[in-house]
Image (cartoon, rainbow, N blue to C red):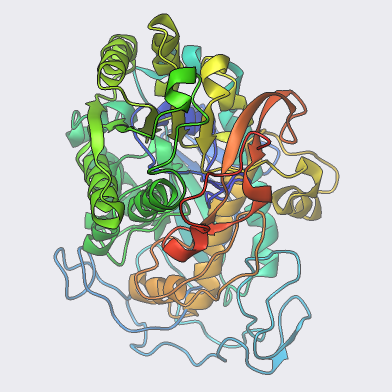
Length: 572
């Protein structure tokens, strides 16, 4: 799993407060990584402001000057809330030309607004592995109001501040692994302010508009309180917002769906199947891997490098001499059950491997301890040597404690959530854990940090999970530039799908393509070392890379070779 914040594989990532809080409510099938930032903003009746100029007004926080971009020209799309699709929302605003204003295509000769000599294959700027192909500086009219939330000078992006009655319980479990919400939003604003000067925005800029949500994001994933969820989506639509950047774990499947129905583009999906994203096209995207990609990654790991081999990384010496017997644990949300189905069916079809015991848990923090005891008893009774845990960041805390109490010592295959979260579960169990997440790079050398210092040389990031903010904002801006001046949901989707293949970066490889609702294509594997010094924060306890830090393609089974050989982890 990506660990530098992009919610890419590394980013995926990401054990942010949001992750930790909402994670409770949801399962991001492989990595999260992530990212998107959460923002808990104290809203007062009188406006206040932070370092980056975010003014908060009553129910809504409006951020003057926050980043923006225009999206690429493209064909009209269908789907809920788009012209021609259910909901009938307009894809273009009043007076917008159907074809949009003329604009030089990506890679055309000319000079970019950043002074780069543009040409075929040249990137917009040199500071990111994920920079879009360059576009010559735009001149002329941009079509003005081409879609809801888009004007001649501005693109409005909403952000739902979290609300949950279970938040204090989640915080008590997560401890210092929780981020500071104000810090996250400050970092997001810092990146947006800089990106507004670097990307081709076709005369516009992005303005972030946080608002206080009424829906309980943890209850939503249990299908409860959905009237408030729908009301929140309508709040975003009525701003009006073109897009929503709510941190994935502070959203929910239902919030995302309601945004799509309201005609708002959203980049907060977390581990849902590709079929789900297709159903809500052209409105839904994710900076973390799709659940389908994550499921295929688990299948490739298990079939190519684990099945039919002894469980050598288990804590129980008896298991170490036995061929692996797999168990599977995940949340009981409908979409995550579908991802679990893809794992189980994929193992059976690919290598004839069955899941000996499969158990789902309810995403209710108050019930985590009781559920953990029962699940561990079932895994132990079934003789499971290797537990695949598609779990949120909080549930493994209670799960590993229950395993200790029942003297159950399997090997674990799960999701990495950054080093701070890895210190929360029982450490004797964690030292037998492999995840889709390698070692975090030296923090000061990461792209997210280097770009932050370009944006604000005189300050340090306000929040430890600033990389989550970075990759979410970067993904949004990449698509906005590629979409061109005629910005609407259809051209935005074309921008997403046209993303060029990136070189390897901190977040692995990103690329577009038809149906690429997430850019994340690769992941690393890691093992937990409780004695290692973390590059993330300098503390004891860190993920270390397996296989020499090699990157694996989720969907390419050949990338995981050599087949039928043990993974090289734990220094072996």
